[in-house]
Image (cartoon, rainbow over all chains, first blue to last red; front, side):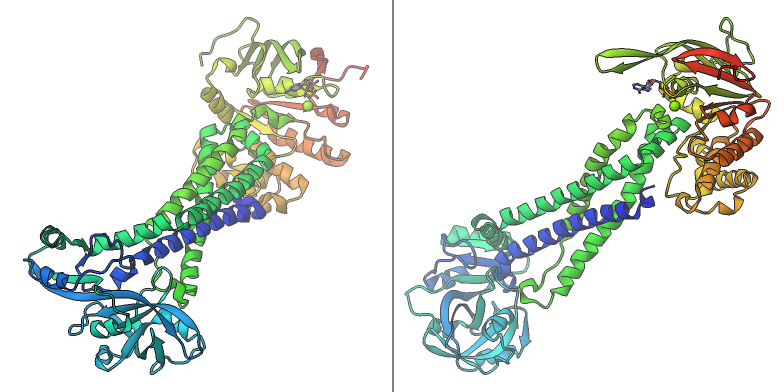
Length: 371
Length: 243
Ligand SMILES: Nc1ncnc2c1ncn2[C@@H]1O[C@H](COP(=O)(O)OP(=O)(O)O)[C@@H](O)[C@H]1O
Ligand SMILES: [Mg+2]
């Protein structure tokens, strides 16, 4: 019955599809964006426990420890290995004379633990050449937007000479700031010297130990703060959520998507039922019960809802795929919970608007059909 | 649903209406549209209810076919006191026993002619395929068998009316009601529809009531009931002379 009127059918489809798209797409961007708060953790996949000064909060909000912390951590039972990890901000002057803030990450000289898993261009052996920095792929877009290869480029990093010898395949940080990886010893050169410069100690746990247990032991015996990957990742996400307007902004958009859906679908639904009120009256006179009419409308609304929902989800996938090459969307994925949430939104939209619209049909006196 | 005889109700009557009144609220005042109607409708006859616009014809047949509660009075349809039934029982009673032809046809726009004609059967739970087959037989009889797969909007007005007639008869109801079937038609089409209705709708065990104020078709009636201001002023096989 709903398909009898092509215009209204497409109106319903559009309303539901549009709502689904807006809700799914905005929630996807939101989740992926706040997860960027944990990119520092994800980009150092080998570390099972992160040890830091008690006041440090996230990979990007940290307070340096004295170098002696490393030995203290290494002495804790259950620690298989522990390596230094330096994270600091610095300025680079590019060849064109632009100034850009960067994150400098110093990874263990010997093992290179603390690097992202893969290199996009080049090999990890380049780290052993003098003055090497490896730039992350988002940084390439930021610093070399003209498309020229950055390999071999010289940078002035806090007045020190640095040469780009590779590109790391990294998850961008929340601010998409340029990141330069280098060995710990050269990082100490690039970043001007305060006494304490050890930001983190990265720890691998021995066989048979859990990261949680080892972290607890480290905290107890060193007085430092030790967090598992999951804990520090969560802290990074929470930091973004608590310190930016992002949840509110996206929340408003998602809410608007819902409201627009209710408005379009509700209006179309009501118009549709009103246009057909005589037909419904005829059915009621003939002897079709209200519950059968509700079933009929429900089944059809469900079908339209399913198709519209499908369009919205496919649209979101196409959107994420389509922008996959854009560094802003790098690594974006749709968590399985999000389509379920938008499905629930569609069900609520249809139930709400359908219920309001169908009341007029249910109240129609069958006798009205003779008027 | 007991079969009892109300005083004055012939057991073979299709409809037995006694003391029917109906009031409508119009703002502050209450208007009485029907004033104590008593009448019997017999099966095998084509009965007309005629009268000026506003005389209460539609209200009366609505009450007699179970879609409008009377303010007072009792209606027995084939022995059942229909307004003593529960809502659901009344709906099912209509579905089983009554065929409706509406002036605007009120076909469902998104399903084809056969499905529209099959609606009462489908609502009764007859499998769709069988229901369509039975509807097609009737559409054939009404000379629009070749239009069975078309949507209402692809049909002419006359064809749509035939689909509506098929829908009213497909489940072989014992009572057929029809409000102003010729009001929107010119004289010759109106005549043709009435001939058709006489031919397919009237049968010995079925009662057929037609509301009309179309004097061009009065000669086709077996019986004519005249309503004036909510009262029956004439009941006979022909129109009174003063009309
Ligand atoms: N639902 C209603 N509410 C108020 N007045 C009504 C209603 N239905 C009918 N009437 C009034 O009852 C009178 C008879 O109406 P109706 O039965 O439709 O007459 P007819 O079919 O003979 O033209 C009219 O005056 C009409 O205005
Ligand atoms: Mg009328």
